[in-house]
Length: 104
Image (cartoon, rainbow, N blue to C red; front, side, top):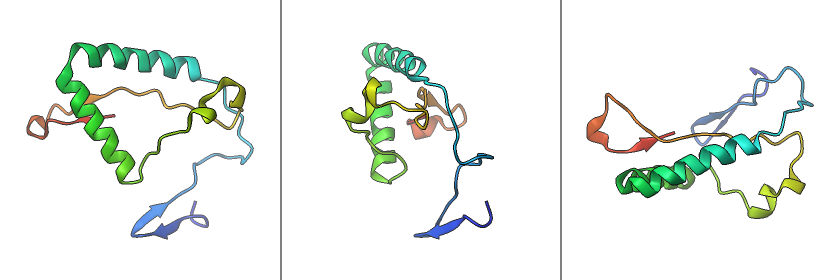
């Protein structure tokens, strides 16, 4: 970690802490899709949650903390063992009700 840490625009960039560089990860696309379908159901039932979640995710993308993945990279045929989906869901922070925004 110490030899690969880089300071870029005031933020540290660190490699993932894998012991080996050639990591093989299982395909978890089905789990991530299941979680996304749950999000869609909650969006349909709760417009405020949908708006807050969308605002939060757009902020993450605009700040460069996340990016939209092109559809061609999401194709099952393009999946290899170096790809890992992050299953997530939105939550409200119980100690920050005044913030009225979602986080993942």
